[in-house]
Length: 133
Image (cartoon, rainbow, N blue to C red; front, side):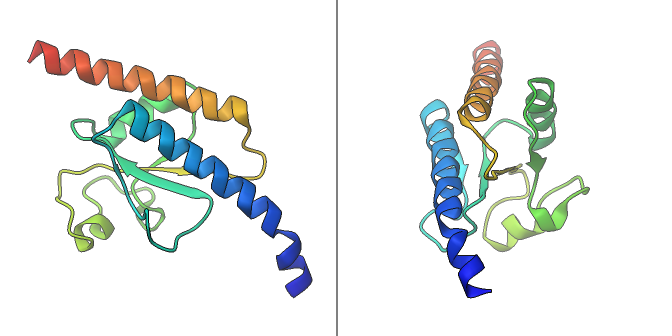
């Protein structure tokens, strides 16, 4: 079992690198985004973040329409709509909606680019709403 685990480490490193790339895209397009878990031990395959002024459910639909599959909220709240008890326990407010992206060994550069384009569209719409307000 240990040999199998060690054999998987290069794949884990590649997945972690893709996760970090996703998070870098989020921070570059949305400097005020909150990325959860940075600086703490965490899964290599999961990026969990929130964008102020964007409801997670609305963003999830926009990503889906762009061909990007992700989830709103933490894995332990899958299928539930409403504030995340996990984020609340971490000290974040009820109004914060979060998005969770899972990355795997098959996630490639084209998937990362699709995510970037979809997020750019979401942030452009957020900026339009802010200008109109």
